[in-house]
Structures are given as structure tokens and as C-alpha cells.
Length: 523
Image (tube, rainbow, N blue to C red; front, side, top):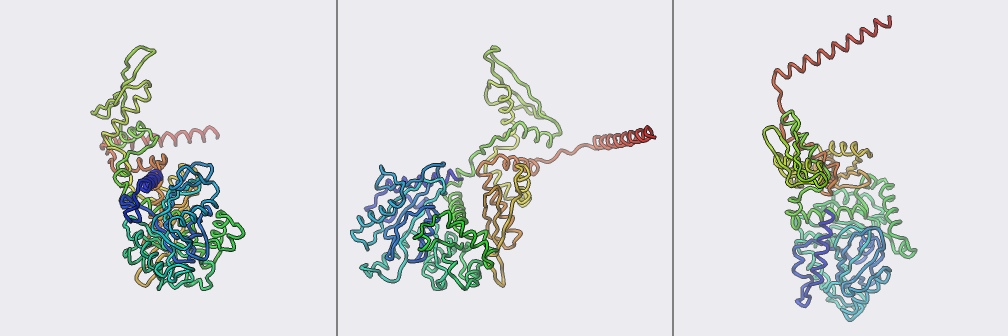
């Protein structure tokens, strides 16, 4: 799935490269089919600190006035280990390795477009960041909403900013990251109100609560995080950003993330929510929402119809099938062609009265048998696609929690660890959200009505992710499950069953007789 997300990033970059901006549109029309994440917040909400926490670098302008005066489209590309660097679309031949220079160029390019240190423009700046420490995402940093024109800015700038923000977040392909400060009254929050206005069902809005560490009244914060007040469709994520003091002493992002984890893990009021708090959890949530959109809107057909890429050997799968269905083994007949020094193999496999021939000739006998097995297994069970196995996962007969335990046992790793918390607590209904950690990876489930069901959904998210990533162990487990659920076990006739009973009785009596002989010998 990560490859498909990266592909969407590249398509977005292509759209912006080929865009014709003189029409007056904030974005080219091709964007309407590609998902992106718009970051919306008020001035002083901690929006810049949060974006830098997601990217892992200090690259945004800061100041007492409006820091973001043009939309900043940031394409994040995950790379192999190596140098982190950035490139602007308006400077295609220049590479930035010093991110302080990136910040200065954003300011300079904004001033060139607006002609003033206080002007704003809806024409985006396009920036690509390449790093091994990011996930493949496209983020748009929007100007912060404000009620008062600052410095020498025009009074109309307040409405211009709101119109610009709405132009982005009203698009159906936009995932809204709504950032609010914990010290504000969210019932009257402009951010919350606009989000609910453009996304009434809340299906594409993710709320982020900043400055939690500055709040003395932690009970009110817990009420928001647990969904007792100001609820969105998805649960709020609390974060602890770097303060201006932290930035002044050059605290890096890694240290800030460690401090954030410790804060949620050690604060009594938030300890039970720690598994779904913090910037690291937010990054995972954004990736999950983006993947969900891609599956349903962009890559659904390509994703579900693609064949599984795995080293699972079809010869062993065919043997399991024939033993279960017929109680016999498949038989192989290999035909050779050519001289001993230039020989080709063609294989025919017999399954009961059916014959299946390898699709092509091979240089090795082993490859010919595997090819014939593949042909036979596909004919008997159908193509193994992601759609097939994902459909199997959705069946209630498959216990995903048990499947993860089997996976951990097969790979000889620690058992999965689950964490659950309430995301909405009311008189009529309580909702739960669970996460599961396996092999140092965290998987987020869907919201559920019971704790037990939320754990199952977390396990389902983990198994689906492993399947999509082509994990061989998980694929083998699911293929075995598919055989058990779709291929009825052959029922043996009464005579064979009676023969088995007599054989078992004979073996038992022989063991007793041998034991008696040993005892007599000792006497």
C-alpha cells in the first residue's frame, strides 16, 4: 500500500507541475481525484510546530504576524537511508540540505508573489521533502484563521484567508486536519464550526488538540479526548508540541517526541489514553485515512484485483488441497525434451481424474512441477488475489486475534500487545478504540461499540496491513484458513473408519503387551 500512496504523491506533483494557474483556481482540476491533507488552524494554535513534528525538520517561517501567507503544498517522499533534502518546484535545479534555507526561501517566494511582507496570495508554493523518516503524504499548510488584521495588513485579509481555507477544505478529496488549542472554548471554536459546516458527517475530519501540557484543568481535556464533549466522527488526537522556549534552545524533533511520549505515559489523567496520543500516533492515523481514501476512490480496483506477490509454494498448497478434498496425494509425470546437455522439462500433475499441464517448458524439473502445481491449484481454487483474502478476513468465522497469535508463534516474536480506551462516553452509548503493537509496529483499529470488538478491529487492521504488504507468513496462514473454510474435508466410509479403530486398538494392545514383558523381565 505504501507504493500506491507514493504513486499518488507523484501524480499530485505531476498535476502541480503541469498546472495552469492563471485561471484563478487555487488548485488545478486534476487534483479533484487525488487525496490530500489540508492543515487548518487558528493563529497561535501550534500549527507550525505540529507540521514540523510530522516532517521531522524545522522548515517553516515563524513570527508574531501571519507566518503562512500562501498555501504551502508539501509532498513527503520516504527514501532509503541517506541525506534529507528538499526541492521547490519554482527552483527545479536547486537542492536544499539546510532546512533553515528552506524557511527563508518560503518567505522570499511569498514576498515575490504578494509584493509585500503582509500580503497574502492563493497561489501555492510547492515543496518536496525527501527523507527516510517520513511517510508518503501530501500536506497543505494553510494560512491561520484570524479575527483581527495584524500589523499593516488590510481589514479584508480576515475574510480573504477564510475564503482561501474554504476553497481547499470544501473539496471532497480533502482530508481536514483541524488543529485547536486546548486552552480555547471548542464549543465556540471557528475551526470546529467550519469543519462541521464543510464536512457535516465528519468522515474526512481529524481533530488535533494542542497545548495540552499547559492546561491545569485536565478533566475538561479528558472529556474532549474521550468524546464526552465536542465530538468528531473520529476521536481527537492530543499532542504536546515544542514551545518557543524549546525552539530557542534548539530542541530537536526526536527529543520532543520522546518528551511527548513520556508526558502522556506518566501523566495520571492521560495514561490510559497514551496509546492513541502524540504526533507519532497522528502520523499513523493520517496514513491510515489516506490509504482508506485511496482504496475506495483511487486505487480500489487496481488494489483488490492485483495478484499476491509471495514466495508461497503452490506445490505444497496443492498437496494440502488434495489431501483435504480426496484423501490422496497429487501425482506428477515429467516429460523431457532435447539432448542431455540441453534438456527441457514439461510436467503433468494428476488430481483424481483431472490432468493439469505446466504452462511452459522449463530448464529445471523442480520449476516444471511448481508450474504445473500452480496451474492445477488456480484451476481448482481460483486466482489468489488480495480481494479474495481480504474477503476471507472480513468473515466472522476468521478470528483475527487468534491469527495474530499464530503469526507471532510462526515468526517466534513477542505476542501482540493491545491497548484500548474510550473515545465517546455517554448515557446511551460508549465507543472504544484499540491499537495493537506487533514487531515494533503499531496498528490502529476502527471505533467500536465494545472493548472486545475494538480489539478485534485492531487485529483486523494489523492482518490486513500485513497482507497488503505481501508478508509471506501471513499469506500462508490465510491460504491455510481458506482451504479449511472453502474445501470440505473428505468423509471416509464406514469400513475405513472401522479399520482405523481396529488399528488403534491393536497398537494399544501391543504397547500394553510390551510394557508387561519389560516388567516381567525386571522381576
